Length: 198
Length: 409
Image 1 (cartoon, helix red, strand yellow):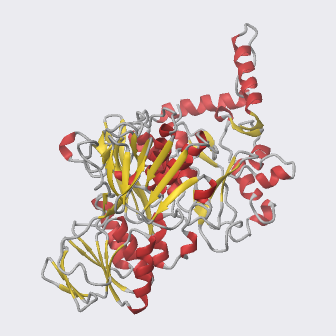
Image 2 (tube, helix red, strand yellow):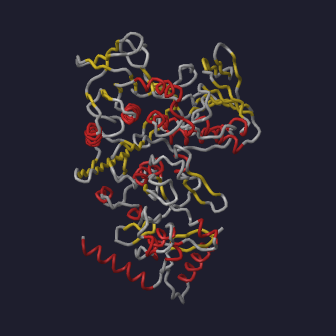
Image 3 (cartoon, helix red, strand yellow):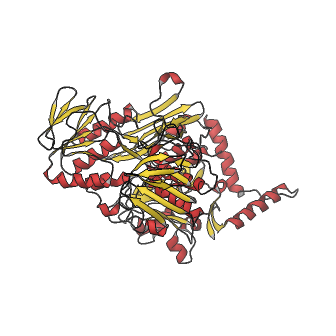
C-alpha cells in the first residue's frame, strides 16, 4: 500500500502543498474559482515554521491506534481499512475538540467544510485524498511538492531509498547529498541567519 | 475462562472489546446499572440543551452485546464482592463467579448536604434517565438554579440557558472551573457567562430548599433566597465502589491500580472513573475521571485480562470545553503551589481573548491552560503525557505560532 511519506529535510516552506490541498478539497477543483467558494476551501496539511524558520509539512499520520479515534466522543472518527486512512464523519462530529486535545501533532482544525452539513463547524483533517486516489491520482500535496519533501510510495520503497542514500554517503565516491543541493544550501543559510539574530 | 465486567460505561465497553480482539471464545458477562445500549455520557448535556436528539447518544450498535457474545445483566447493581470466593453478588443475593473481574463501575454524583434535597425537580446530570426526567419538566420551568462551577454544572447551566430559562449558577469557589482551570482563565469564563446572561454567584453554596412537593425556593449560605423551579446539582462525582471490601482491595479515593490496571486482589482489575492510577503530571496516585482515560484504561485492563501483559504509563487529567465564544483546553497541574519550585510562564492578550499558561517542573512540562487558539494543545498535552524533556526555549511554547515543527531537532 502506498502512502504519503514526509521528508522534512527537503521542505523549503513554499506552502504549495497547502494551496493544492485546499483546491483538491474544493467544489470546483480549480484554484481560481476555489477562492470564490463559500465556505472557503482550507488546507488539511499545515506547513509549520520551525525554530530556524525552516518549513515542516505537518499532516495527519493516520496513527494506529489513533488517539483521536479513541477519544472521539460521538464515535465520528473511523478508519478506512483499504487505505489505512483515519476519517471523520462530519454528520456525527459535534465539534467538541476532543480530537485536538489528544492529537500529538496538532493537525486538527475546526471550520465549515464543503463536505459537512451546510453552516456546521466540524473537525477537519487530512483524508489522504481518497477521492483522488479512486481516480488514480496521487494525493494533491504530493503532486504539488517541487522538492520531494512529500512522496507517495510504499514504506518499503521509502526505506530502501533512505538506506541506499546512507550507504552511498558512506562510500569514498560519495557525491549525492541527502537533500537536493539547493535545499541544503538554503537550510545552511537559514541556520546562519538564525545564529546571527540571537 | 469467565470474564465478568462490572459497568457498561465506556471503560467496561472498551475492556470487553479488547478482550474479544484477543480471545474470541471466553465467556464475558457485563453487569450494568443502566439499561440503554452503550452511549456517550459526556454528550447527555447536549440532549438537555436540545442540540442533539437522544438517538445520537449511542456509541455502539443495538447488537453490541450479541455481536461480541457478551451476556448482559442490565438494570443491576453489584452489592458485594468476595475476592476469596471469586464471586460478585448482584441485587438481592444472586452470585456470579468469575475467573477475571473488571471493576468499571464508574462514579456517582456527589450528594449535597442541604435541607429539602428530596423535593421534586432537583436533579443530578449523570445519565440519560435523569436527562429524560429533566426534559419532562422543562416546559413548565422558568428559573433554574445550577449548583457547582465544574464541568457538569457548567454544561447544565449552558444547556438550560440555551433552552431559554433564567439560570443562576452558584459556585462555592471564587471562579468557575476551579478544578480544571486557573484563576485567569476562570475569570475569562466568568465574564463570558455573565455577558451571555447567566447570573453567577461565587463564594456561596445552597444550604436548603423549600416548596410544596416540588422545589420553589433555595436558600444560599450568604442569606439570600432565590426563586427556582428546577435545580441541577453538579458538585462532581465520587467513585462507585461501596461493594468493595477494603480488607481485600486497596481503596483510596478510587480503587488503587498498578500499571496493568490490577487491583490489590488477584485476578481483579479496575478501570475508568472508579480507578486510581498514577497521574503523569503529579507523579502520584490520582483519580482522573475523564472519557479518554476511561477508554485507555478499559482497553489496557481488557488486554491484561485476556492474558497479554501490557503496562500503561499513567493517566493525565485534561479537558476541553467550548462555551459560547470561548474554547478552553487544560491539563495537568494548572494552579501549582508556589513553594514547590514550579516555573510558570503565561501570556494573556485580552484584546484577542487568548490566554496561555504553562507550568514546568525543571525541564518537564506539567501543566497547560489555553483559552482560544487551542489547536496545538494536543502537542503540549502529549509532551506532558510522554514526560518529554523540553529542549527548546520555553517562551516559544507560549507563542501562538508554536507548532510541532519547533520541537524537531
